[in-house]
Amino acid sequence: MFKFLHAADIHLDSPLRGLQRYEGAPIDEIRGATRQALTNLVQLAIDQGVDFVLIAGDLYDGDWRDHRTGLFFVSEMSRLRDAGIPVFLIAGNHDAANRMTRSLRLPENVFRFSTKKPETRSLDDLGVSIHGQGFDNPACSENLARAYPRPIPAHFNIGLLHTSAAGSLAHASYAECGHDDLRGKEYDYWALGHIHQRGSVWGDRRIHFSGNIQGRHIRETGAKGCLVVTVDDRGEADLRFEPLDVLRWERSLVDASNADDPYAVVEKTTRVLAELVAAAGGRPIAARVEVAGGCRAHERLVAEHDRWTNEIRAAVHDLGRGNVWIEKVKFQTSPAHDADVPVDDGPLGELIQYVSESRHDDATLARLSEELAELARRLPGEFRELDGALRLDDPRSLPRLLDEVEPLLLGRLLDRWSAQRRQ
Image (cartoon, rainbow, N blue to C red; front, side, top):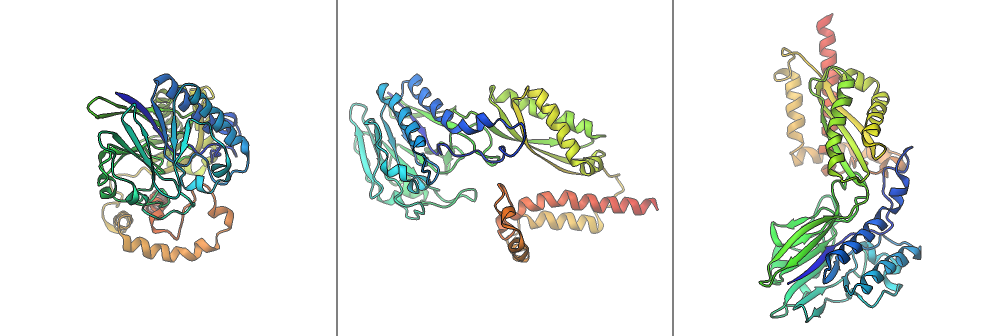
């Protein structure tokens, strides 16, 4: 029996985005988050007594010129050396753009796989062989998996690979490969990196992304960490997720249906966030609050957006004793309406149906993106570069835009309809 740790996408010293510009943000936690997460990884490896550590690419975060980043990594790897734990790593797309990746001398317990061709490292005392190849350029489109060697007989064979696998809308495409490319190698385990959400690939229990070890913005929510893999004497692998993150990002979905006033919405929000606080295990939380539903509080929420945003922030600050921070509040409510409001039939019903169907109609989304492309070109550069900014000329981003537009449009039309009835 042996045990190893599978991690990826450390992005050491990458800035956490979306918090620094707000007063009261946990700046110290933000600045040191990726370093502390790496320290947590090393300590976990030592405490668990793992036999080796795998890092499946993107150790660094682009072309950093500050060697203190690399020196910090060296110091942490030296801790593993002193504990007798070897480390095997490959370069990902971010590492390929980094000068330190090529020039920094690493401790002798760290083996970095070639970027020119696949290599194999065997641990004969454990009966383990690790196969890997790193990126030699930051835009690798080659299917690297195809060239990986056949498994070593009578060994537990591991493939270490940085890849987008079959592709993901949330991540750029690198070194794409198919299920047959990986299963065809007949390895016992594939340790993948690049996709920041952990999970098995194609539902295959032998192919896994570990996810990144520290969420960096609101699109990387939930617990982040690594996989601890224990292999028994029959060669069966048991996986256990271990959180390593220092600050956790969360989306808080609040159902404001039937809320009579904004204070009821604030109360609902604090209840939802209390559950996230309990699940975070004492970590600071950066949360985006998204309030939706038809309610009588709608008009005041929309008319006094800043006030009720700050009311929610104040209530949550008190709840978390300064350990919870609201990244943004989005009010997506709609007016409460009587049963005789013509939503199901007539023009309003047709509008709702059209918006709903458009979300899933590729042709409609493509036409809409073409119409919005000119508007997108006219936007100032700073708006296009904002974190989480919508790509108006990208059909894949439009369903999210429709989600935000529908309640606002419906609310205004219902307000006008109700006003006409009162006249």
